[in-house]
Each structure stands twice: as structure tokens, then as C-alpha cells.
Length: 462
Image (cartoon, rainbow, N blue to C red; front, side, top):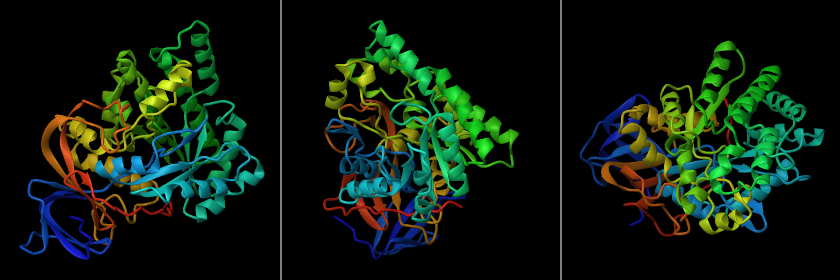
């Protein structure tokens, strides 16, 4: 039964607060958390005995319904946001991606036009920049004022998205001047192009060769480029989807070398923690599902990155969720790995898998787990005054999580998620119920019918 909440109490659970887990009740009034207080006998109440009461997770890096040309796109806003809610993620930050010649404002409006009629969770937007003409960069301050304070530039994909070094420097100067944050996809586009051509020229086009087209050195070189340019321009920087422990360690070194410099952030994605390049040697479907960039890396990289996430060197855990149905990936594979749409799913899996594979073995403390999937993403992406923690006055985005079940993971949401790389993985824990701004949207693991759409969130960096 749908619970449209005026005032209700979540009782007898263990509440994740900024100071740690405690036995308390959470009182919701309207869309906000009214109180977190000592347990009392009250009615009405939802009994949370044996459950963890968590803040709704915040995924700061997703690509829902992303067009890739030829009528193809990643799984849409409705399907992807359904998986998000079922997996305990109540807020995402997606990307508005302009076409060549399109203004940034027009791209943002186009993306909102796709999202607003379909998305079920709350969302914000980053804006990608692929051109650095004066009139394009002049739009950045206006978007910051409109609640979009984060931008993205690519050092990869020449001819489509890649910015040359002088262009990236211009973008960083504009972002720094606007007091915004730049996210950088750090792979060396020229190096990847050469590697891909060498492989394809000798007929090595099966999915197993994909990681060799994105060598580790490509990432380390591009990270160095991004750090140098950020230091020159004073631009706050985030290295997205670090796939190598060396990347995170280099970010830590840069912070140490320039403690008074602009912020330098580092994220890791779910698939780079808990999957590895062995997927490319697996069956055809699994290999196709694993094609993403940067690619899955050597088996030792995931545990090393997990340690760096645990100690705070890596700031937070995201997904880079960009999931394609198996039919779309298989159609691309007919032309070789280079034609397969890149991306893995994860927005529905992140909370549970990071608990099962991080918290249960002891690699992550429960407190750091919540920081990594909710609190820090909200704070660093400009939502820290309303999302990412259970505190009085915050949005009542709440997950009731049962830590007990052990089972094999099955993809959440729409049946066309058959290409998920997580299918069949042994896990522990289950999202039982989810509330978004005080309204119950998931009950006993099922989306409540007629769940209303989420809303666009204006963000402000502090």
C-alpha cells in the first residue's frame, strides 16, 4: 500500500547518522525529517526491527537514456531510475551533452525535456563542454547561477568529445573563474587511437581485446595532463572513474604537494571495484556487458582501489551508469569491439553490492560506506544541505535495508537489463523499502504503482 506521508515514525531500527549508527526513531513530516529521537511506542509507525535506516544514496555520475546516434541510446530515464529506486538510490546527477554547434543552455533544456516526463528519482545535471569558443565559455557563469555548477571535459575520443590541451586549459580557466568544478575523463585520446588501430589492423576485434585499446598508461598520462592544467589555472578538478590505484595515489600526491591549491577530487565506480578484466574472457554476453571506458583492469586493482576508498584517498563511489540492452551491444559487436556502445550498469546495484562486497568482509566500515555512497557525493556536488544524510530538516530520502539475506543477485527493474555484468553474483543484504521526500516509492522490494516523477535539483557548491 502506498503511504503518502504527513507524519509517520520509523521505529526500532539502527539509524545511520553523521556520528555513526544508533538505535533511534526517525520522524517524517511532509517531505522532511522532523526528528531523530530515542525510541518510543507510537502509532502509526513502521516497524524497522532488524533493519538499517539509511539515507537515500546519491549517485553523482550517471548517463540515463544517453543518445549515441543511429537511434540507439542507453536504457532510458524511466527504466534506469526505476532500478535506482529499487536499489536505494534516490538522487542522481546526470550529464547534459551538447551537439556540435549547440549552446550549453539548449543542451540542458533538451536533457530536462527528456528527463522530466520520465524520471522517478530526483536528479541534477552536469554539463559537458566540447567546444571552447568564447560564446560557449561565456555560458558557464549563467548555468552556475541556474544550479548547474559542474562541467565535464574529455581528454579522450578525438573528433567527437576530446579537447586538445589548449582547449582544456581555456575550459579550466572559465570554470575556475565561475567558481565551478570541472570533471575530466582522463584517458589520452591519441594513445588510445593508435592502440585501437594496431589491434584492428591485425584483426584483433573481439571483446577480449578492448582493454588493450585503452592501456593503463593512457590513463596515467592523461591524469598528469589534467593535474598540471588544473594547477596552472587554479581550477577545481575531479578525476572521474579512476580505474587504477596509481591514479588515486597520484591525486593524493598532488593534494599533498599543493595543500592550498584548488580542490582535487577522485571518484571510483562500482565496476572498477568489484569486476575485472577476466570478464572479457568470459562468455560472449558477459564480455559485451563489460565493455566500458576506462576498461575493467587487472584483478589486483579493485582491492587496491577499495583500500583507497576506505581511507578517503578516493572521495566517493559512483557508477558511471550507462547501460545498454544486450541486443544493442551485440549489434555493435558485429563491427568489432570498437563499435560496441561503452558502458556498464550499476545504479541499482551500488548500495547493496558495496555493502556485500565492502562492508561485510570488513574492507569498509559501515560509516565510511554511507559517506561514500551518500554523504560525500551530496556534499561535493552541491546538495549537502538537503541530501545524503539523515538529519533534521533534510529531505526524507530514506532506505530501509535488511542486512540479513544472502542470495544471488538478479538485475533490478526492467527485464531488458539482460546484459548486466552483476547477474548471479553472490551478495548479502536487500533494500526493502524506499522513501523519496517523505513518500514511499518502494515497498518490500517492489516499486509502488503510480510513483510520481522525481524533480530537478538546483545545486550550489560551497
